[in-house]
Length: 238
Image (cartoon, rainbow, N blue to C red; front, side, top):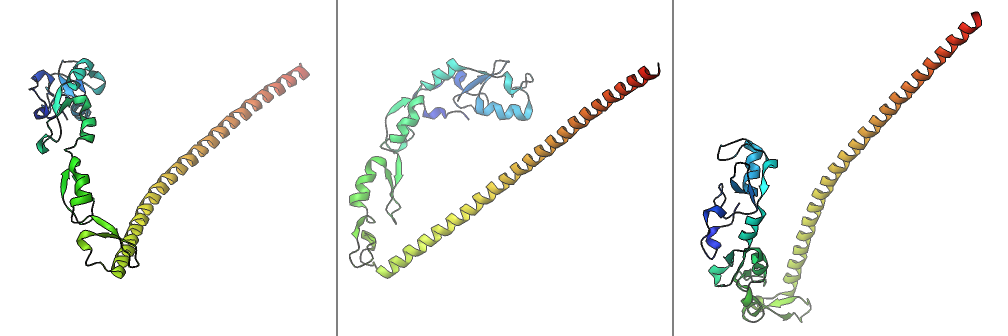
């Protein structure tokens, strides 16, 4: 699937767009008939249809040619930040977009405080979580349970109920982990049995092959003995 042309700073010419998805070419490849597609668009098509989407000739995946110069040109085109709708005005080369996206201050991030459902820009999240959030932590309980207290539940905190809820949460997590372990164990047991079956089949094949080779050797040896016996008999009587 090609890149959305709306993300590019300037308009992109049609010769840089995929003839199937019409997006800006991602890893462009050229067919023997001269048509250019995104690799991820044309490969599944050829696997199913075995012919150019333009219906000009039959081709296969091995007939495609990577268009590296065109790929390099596209990767150096300027694009808007993924979060320009949130206020980021920075532009970068397409090849640098992922790195910028990861550290962009306008990347939307959900507040990590339990009970808070706000989503803010990455540049604002620390101040919100530590100083402004109504669900922010305000210290540990000094009445016996030692659990972390949050501003929004401070007055309603009950040590017994809080510890009970904590135990329930941990039991649920343990149950979930056990279920996942069972799934993984079953999966690997199935694979192990499959491998054991293959090993057994190979062992039987080797035994049969060894038996065949041994029988052939014995047959050849018996044949040689018969010839020697016949020669001795002939020499005795004649």
